[in-house]
Length: 220
Length: 235
Image (cartoon, rainbow over all chains, first blue to last red; front, side, top):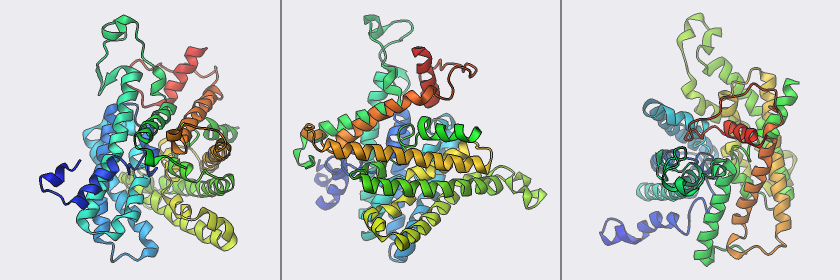
């Protein structure tokens, strides 16, 4: 990385806020946050991307809002305040999706609502936005949302490609009924990849690969 | 009979953890020891058993399309369902605060061992998910909503207890380094979820009128249809 730093956009410390969650401090594979929604909707690439964008919006704006009001909210009621902020943002996302992508919002069903309880968001509010300024909180928010998005897109990519032979709805491997493309060679879709348990196993494999590459993450 | 069916359906077929992946965060974080897992499982069951019927009342008398007519007939045009997220989560957050106070008072040892995770029940996806699924599945009465809450809570309890027991044992096996801890837990959960899928045909077995099989391969959002399709293929 170091790209933003080189062009002089961000200082080195700020740069780390964005680059860390993408690798060694990934919210899903290392911090173990936000897994609930990450797994259920990754059978299609499109749904994964829409979910990532929604989380990106909620986290970016939410972290800024929480950071702005961090000094005036009594710590006793902060959880309810945080939940209200997130819920408001999620309602906006939900209404926008219903207006512009109705089919997709039906596929995502309750999982858009479950962004509210996505532990990534609360976790970052608690761990970062409550103690840091506006700009850094914003960077932390989008950094973590990108880290979340990377895993979602990888899982969605493999599940859709291996499960239904399409990417973003386009048949990239040929037509399974007319037996064109790869299917002419006797390739078959692995319907198992579409079932929810496979999401867990794919994430398990991602963790395996990541930890094999960076040894200091290995537990015990 | 209706209640028993719903209970078994929410424990085994629509298991919170294995079928819908709700409550995964705390499921993974608190499942290192059986004793804490039991504590969290019980807390989740308790909170679900209270919040689902409460939110059912909210849904019926405040949020649904035309639900406000009991106040005044002229309110029939109001549809407040877009507010459900914020009202549901407010109910849940309040209830969790209450449970926290009670547990702190009566069982300090449990309170200490659950530590940070008790307030996090408020943001446990399983709790909000229970209410949202209750709403989207249009559960008919408050008794059924209670059964549904208890059933899904019990399903979570079962799942976290099982994985905690497995994780206690797996410490003695030689798992490849990079898979140790989180990685192997994910894979075991995946295998357990496959196991739980075999309950899929338990209540629908045979005598249900044949559903239209999913012809469009892209329509994969609905797990029920997929499970059903696979069952058909097996038969």
